Image 1: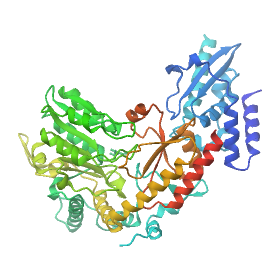
Image 2: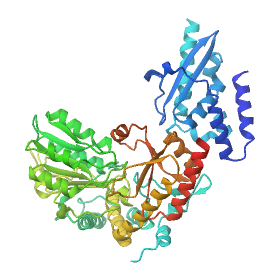
Image 3: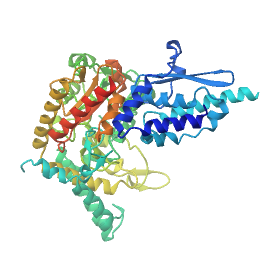
Image 4: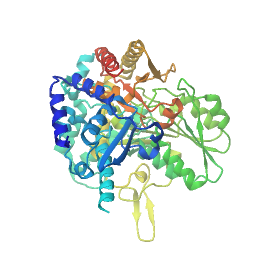
Length: 141
Length: 405
Ligand SMILES: Cc1ncc(COP(=O)(O)O)c(C=O)c1O
């Protein structure tokens, strides 16, 4: 599926819930489906800066597509990163670079989008895009 | 004045706010307090009616502003029971005051001298002492704390010697709420002729200190922790220190005479007050002190102790909940975690229910390292909080626990 299609799917899934409690519960359950980073990859250089909780993010490229794995010690953060990984993993680097992130707002998680928010959602997106830029430049060279 | 919580709450316009659809429950008072209408009115009145630069003009407005600023200094002097108004130096806040003292001590320290700080300091306040040690070759010693979050006094006594030049301790720890025995700490330091600087940022809203009775050398605090505005605070220094310490910054207000050959400095407190100060802030600080005294520190203490006792016992009923900072002498701060749940997750969920608590390391990384935790959830109560708000917090934490485990 294309990134936009996955984002549409996420928006319609979250639209089923009436209140924030249900939305958060769903997000927490998505966190449990997160493709976990290998324990031995949980190193300092895989940590994303700017989060109050710890977030490790790893990427690999296979057949021209970027695959992300991650983990966090906080469960809500895990949910957020699971949403991001569902949207951006298994995609071509150029598509990740071009992807829009307005869907976060539309699924009702707007409060996490502020760059000053301690959860680092913005840092996570930036880090995913940076990996994509690095892979794209490998492809170009 | 009898303590009427509903009347007091009406003084704070922000308490009428809704957050995420719920009535605001503000339990982050250790970070900053809310402001009563009386203080807000004072700020509006200053800018509406007599804004002018101080200590400079002969015109009426300047005179009125100067008078109000100096009257405020006297109010602060009386409140903290300093001997003289000129021993109260206006600063931009606690951090500024600490840096001013640390900078001044550069001239008095030599290699091998010692400075003592406690293990429960705000970590940004450890940095000025580390920098001072780097500049002078002095050594920094740290008073350890126990599992309960209490300073180990016997260790402190062992550290003191004729090499000790300065002791820096907060009156109350912002992360744990522990009240430190500052009177005893000061007495012991004076036995070896060491100076003492007390950080009152966390205590000034709960306890009215008597600086002369404490016989402390330096004391710092911030107005914003005690219902005043941000960006203003005080550094108290005993007159003898005021005369000894070199000025910190050069500029207007702090000079007596300037020629290109030589400048003579103004006397206290102006020697340390270079440039146009936060005039409005200084005046409003006085209004905040008036307000708190009208509420009454005895009333404040009694009410906050009730909140603390109730919150502690109700929170402890939640299975797996652990409180950090369990000494007998505490102010109304409850720092906690629930087993297996990250403090950030709890903070996020309770915020969705309109409750403002702090999560994280509370600028006290060494304390978090001591307990080997990433941080805590910290609820800190003020006199305008209610028992009902404690119930709201406890229910929200229970709900968060259900959602998160
Ligand atoms: C114990 C303590 N010291 C110092 C500070 C710093 O105060 P300010 O930021 O107003 O300079 C704080 C503020 O959180 C504090 O709790």
